[in-house]
Amino acid sequence: TKIQYITITPDGFEAGDAAPVMFALPAGRQDLDITLQVATDVYQNEAVARGWVVVSPVAPNGTLFFDGSEQFVPGLLDWLATWVDVEGGKPHLVGVSNGGLSSFRAVGQNPDRFASVLVFPGFPSSEADRSNLESVDLPIRLFVGETDTGWVGPMQETFDALTTRGVDVTLEIFPGEGHRVESLSDGVRIFDELDQLR
Image (tube, rainbow, N blue to C red; front, side, top):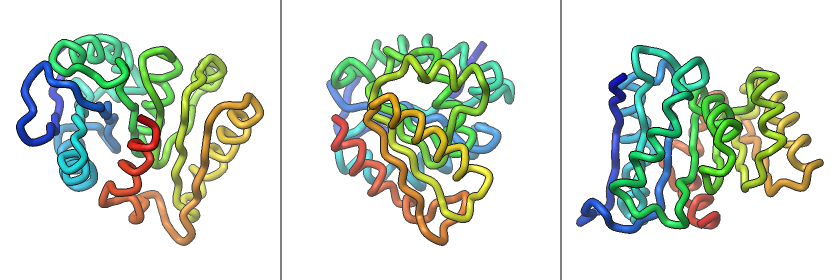
């Protein structure tokens, strides 16, 4: 299986350099176009300015990262570690929409491979994902638009369950915002959160 991916690196970055890393799972069909669009529009400016490396894989053969392609996540993480000296030894997992669902699949199956999880929006979308989440104990940040009614409820339930377990978790609901949270579209708040989690 061949997997395309988008990378963003700071100015002057060379293979083997140390950097904080975002492993970003994309939205929608998780194809090359949407992966490139989110990486360019949301992540690029702040990642370059703050010295982050971003790696965002494209779902191979159209198989989403919560519908079969999650099997490739461990190999992608192994590959990532061969060319970046990942700060803290673990990347930060970020996902938007279908990438948010994929993030909970990935962290539930690989709970020791990530430093944190940030989704905007996202939640564990299957019973297996919810069960796997019980073994996850790392910082989790949840962001969702107030009018994104199909996502607010499950994310509130996720927040409540994690809070009960004592996990470091926050949920922010953006008033008047929909499925695309415009308040996060420039990446500033996302990287503010990630910098605090380093």
